[in-house]
Amino acid sequence: MPMSGDKLPATCYGKIIKKVTSSNRISSCSRLIRGPFKPLSGPVKRGLKLPEQFIPPEVPAGLPSSLLARRPDIRQAEQLLVAANAQIGVAKAAFFPQISLTGSGGGAFGRSSSFSSLMGSQTAIWSYGASVSQPIFTGGALTGGLHLAESQHEQALTAYKQAIQRAFGDVSDALIGYQELREVRVQQQQVVADLAESVRLSVMRYRGGTTTYLEVLDGQRSLFSAELTLAQARGNEYQSLVQLYRALGGGWQQ
Image (cartoon, rainbow, N blue to C red; front, side):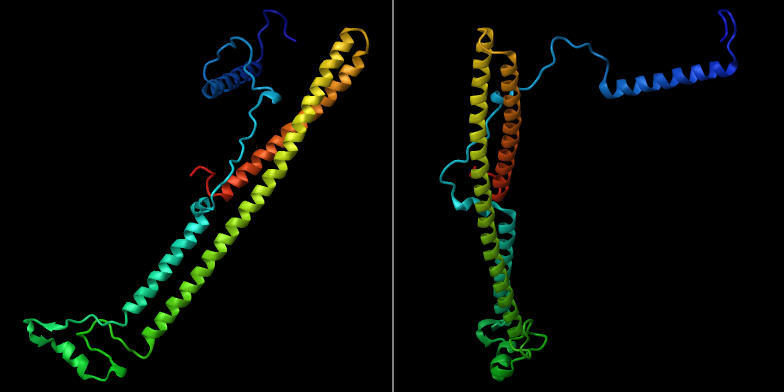
């Protein structure tokens, strides 16, 4: 150890400078993250006590089933059904050729040449040239397209029905879960209230000299355990409400 007034080796100075520099960097990072240091003014703010916390909201009575129409899966299935239905209309429209019925001079000059050619041919083997944009019969292709559109419509309708059934099943499960967990929370809340009253009476008896403080400690320990169970029950009830909110497609507000 060097005595007072002795010079330190160069290596020691280097270590000291390195340590001070590292400490300054840490302090600078802390100020960037937390901001400038502010001394605490008064006690630390804490949340509400467990008995004073907000009770989960009640699910209102008479919820209409029309709320389920907002679910994304039902909306998707509905739009697919609408699109499939529109495809049937497109397939049916394909049977009608897009031609001009009258000539360039109007109806006074009779039918157009393409219309005359069409009516002069055999309807069972209609097949148009370049003047007709959509032939009626082309080897059964249009009929097959119509059957395909109708089949796709049936599939979309089945998927739509299944989406509705699945939605009602989700709401049923969510309501059952909410009912059961709410009953657990209500019962546990009554247990906490009874134990709190028991602790209050134990304290009165202890102050009156009729019991020992051990009884008070036992009651407080039981109350603390019951409050923890109540907190868990409330958390489960809130989770069931979230599941019901999701199953309804966004809550019960219309």
